[in-house]
Length: 224
Ligand SMILES: Nc1nc2c(ncn2[C@@H]2O[C@H](COP(=O)(O)OP(=O)(O)O)[C@@H](O)[C@H]2O)c(=O)[nH]1
Ligand SMILES: [Mg+2]
Image 1 (cartoon, rainbow, N blue to C red):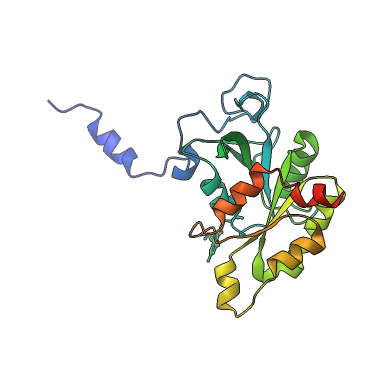
Image 2 (image 1 turned 90 degrees about the vertical axis):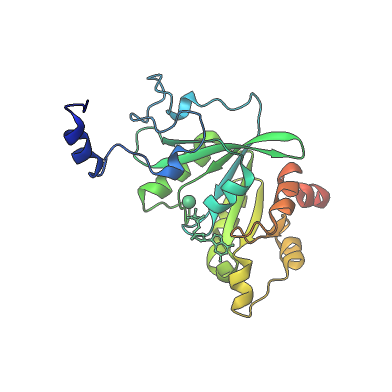
């Protein structure tokens, strides 16, 4: 016997569902996407309700839009991620857990950020997150071929007192353009670890994990 609601269901199946989250936002089993974005309502997706392992270091991926932050986030984290609106905003922040040399760390994929003088809502959220949550380590992700344009933010992050690892992503594009970067010289000049990656293939991710495990302080500490 046919259900009398069949035709209505068929009609609705073809319509876009405004409440449906994109597939990438739904991966993992933990609840995500708190509708309120608040911290005190008990909504499982709210930022304040996330369950990071007690004492886990927070590692934030920071940088301009489209430099490969989310691609690196996927390499650094496992199958579980939580997507939620930052409190009081409609801007989404993704969090996950990664394991580096046996240590579980919380990894945060922040919205696109050009500088500490924010223009967009996304930038304002990232600045708030950096100020309020004070991540233990920043992975400043830049497009290797546009290093000169993106390096000023590295200095701003260092001036703000964050331990920083500079991630030169999209090295494949850099090479395709016939450009090369002396990673060791850059690292020595800046006094911070610099890691070259191709997030599209995972190249350099193991080295990045090693640097994260060492806290990004190796060169700074040896310089003191
Ligand atoms: N060729 C190349 N493309 C990359 C690399 N990393 C990321 N991408 C691509 O660059 C685009 C932006 O990446 P995404 O991770 O969304 O950047 P985000 O905005 O910083 O999070 C996507 O199409 C990625 O597939 C890389 O190392 N090489
Ligand atoms: Mg992204």
